[in-house]
Image (cartoon, rainbow, N blue to C red; front, side, top):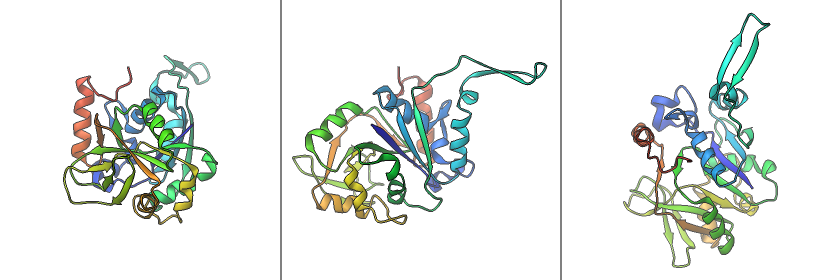
Length: 257
């Protein structure tokens, strides 16, 4: 199953870092947050990634084109016809497709643009700035049991984000973007999607978190998998510092053993 990661936004709320690089390439510890996310999916056996690029997307392409250079010890022997030797070669079982989805395209538009790479198949979808200790296999099992067009991971977080109204059957009855109430269930990303969701997206200017999710909730095609474990997005500089501190402590919940 393919894993789509939205990695094209400008990250204006963390401009201290994003002025230099796209937000998914901001490092937590010794590697970009994007790789933390990919490592977590890979831990559960999901290794086919589609990265929806936009702002400074060339930097993501450069990183993967020189992946071994960034992650291995290298010897450059200029006395032997510029011979390059890669030491401690790190092999990942990944297939990575990098898609330019436009500089000013909104989240829904980015998803629409990767449709041809997904095809008529079920797929995973998440944001390029959120980390969790979510059990991906249990999420997929829940999705297949409830048979909705989308299952998103609902997490409890004070109210900077859209609020979900969830009934006893785990159906999402309504989706309200940027609610002001504290303590509600919010969209934590880490979604499982059916290809029917593409029908809910009009074009580049569509915010996925507005009409598509609101209409899916209206049609009772949006389910919530409630996750009570660790979840944290890197929305602002303070979030980056918080995640960095957890990683340096050696006890990061999302660290793959």
